[in-house]
Length: 357
Image 1 (cartoon, rainbow, N blue to C red):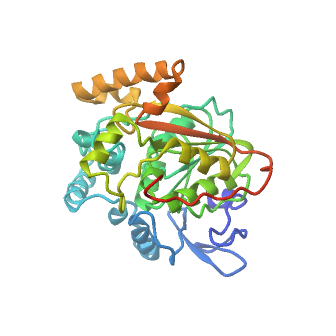
Image 2: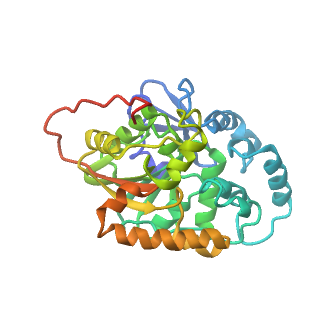
Image 3: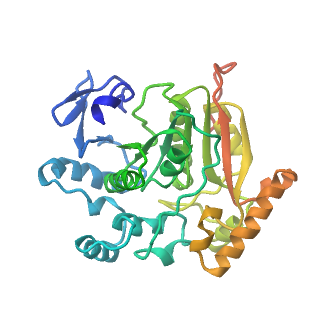
């Protein structure tokens, strides 16, 4: 995999080309990045991470080549109890689902999948809302165990996934092989994408940037625009500050500002300003109502109350195509931006005030 992808990869610090040397990648400025299990670890050690598992991935990379470990439990971001249960399943694997995914699924959509943790018997792979790929190249930013990578690969895209968790991307690659699909995975940071400018036809992200600070989200969107081809499409799921369920969650925390990995809720006008300035002309489409990430493909895996919510959400989503007012009331939105050849003038980059965004 490494030999075939170095023409796409660059140093995440200075964007210089990378060359393979033994078990690492190097740029002309001397920056070095390890390779573990044929996966490049393109994280910057001196940058505060958006997710704590990045530090664990870097630590695992230092010893990974020696120990030959393929799971890297400490990089998964699961609880100590879940690690213990997962370790037992790894000793005696059962069922058709990768044991790591059976525990990572708890982070797929908030609490909606909690009842499936450790009990998953099929992969919840949704329908990605994109046209057929026909071989076009897609980057999934924050891919985790590869749910949307697999959905894109099934639709004919050449898929790349990037994620700070080494254990998660290795699980994604295992699942892809199990399902007869091909995906490429890289360990990296959404704010420092290790790809050449104009590499991708589509940049996609789901349930990731909503956890970033405003500044980190802006940096990630700018990077997603940088690596897009002219005319390429950036599509990112984000939470709407005026969504009914979103308002409920804001009320529960006393409308206090988000910290750490809490969800940040966004005004549509701020999202439009951000994506238009970093990528290009921006529109919105409804993902779902009553939560962040309820997918029709998951209906059969859900308890009765969630099934009802998904059914009504789908009805409202279809109605939003006719009644645009519903878009402004949805909880989860797709922000869709098309990269222009060249902006008319250098835009003023918005400053994201936590109190207004």
